[in-house]
Image 1 (cartoon, rainbow, N blue to C red):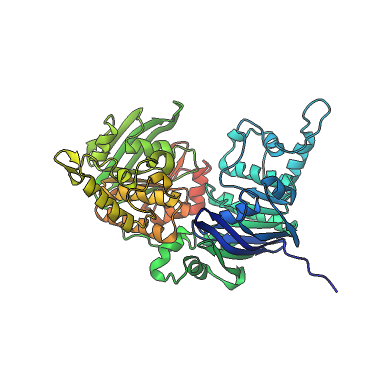
Image 2 (spheres, rainbow, N blue to C red):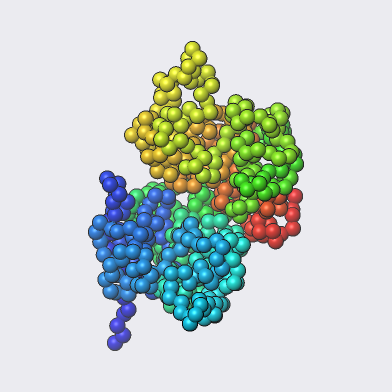
Length: 525
């Protein structure tokens, strides 16, 4: 008689609170041996918090953890590593000027007679790279590597330390479709080698493509564990949102990567013949004075959405800031509504109807110690709607803030709440409310739905539709390629600050865009 082996992981009735907020409410999770297990849910569902408990970054209020059938107490990441648990976070913990090998062995015991001997470590890294399809040069300096390769370094770091259970937190962010395929191939190789993998994600389509089973979390609870063979995209979307999505909710599924972007009609095109934005020969430097955008041309017609797809660090931030009037332009011209804007102060861009939702919401989007009311009035303090007798009408500003809190479902105690006290998703709602309230001629959106739940994501898309119907020209920059493809009338691939390809809506191939984003494709314009 064969004794059945226990699961690789069991988490039972795990509770975690942060003050009065219950982040995990008696969560159960079982991960089998030799499986890729999807941990699926919207933003704020508790997925990462649960895995941070397992990895020792958070201490639970109650509950128990078993690994291979044995109870364990994980009080720190060192405890987790010693127990065979590895975790790759969205933000990589790397020393940029160290080599791959030096980063991987950092914190481990490496012996040598008189000096650090890394020869055995290099040999081990090459062997792991080959076995799991994680191609990396052990002697490469990390800061010279693209995002996809740096992620492989983090995975190899966990494998080098003997992980039997590997947690990957939203690993496909910033990856091209080709890199996603390679990553999923490596995950299957790990499972075939005897490991288990937990994939934290909010993308349904990717979950269905690689996971054996998936557990759906919602509002800090585990609501259902499902076999891949017993579910589909519609069912998973229903479980995630707690109800039936129906045909009108396909846009939410698109935001989750539930279906191919080509199958989702996000908007009825409002594109007009008139040119809303004209950019000629734009040259922009980064903060270090290096040229990052070497000469960019772009036209956006009124009512048109142009999406920019690119691997992070290829000039997206510099381009967006230049077109928003908050970064100096070294050469070239920008016209909005027929008016030349270069050389004008940022206030002139705002007054002319240019609105900007920045990538870094905390650093560039809000004043953390100022109230919601004060943050919403930023940039509009000269407009007649909030002024009376030459002074700010704080009563009117407060009323507008109350309306924005309700309209954008901002979770706050009221308009006097400091913006810095809000969650990331609610900060994003404040920034979006401010941008859409200005009825802009030009709207620059950089990762507009990051940190938002499904309902809020749909609301953003609805507001984009209202803006384009009014003739607003929109530039969308997003790390979610599905979102770029689904929302845009045209998609432009950006590589090293230059146009690497362009596609009209309905002709976009995600893999072709991915090749162009990495400089491997032929420019298609």
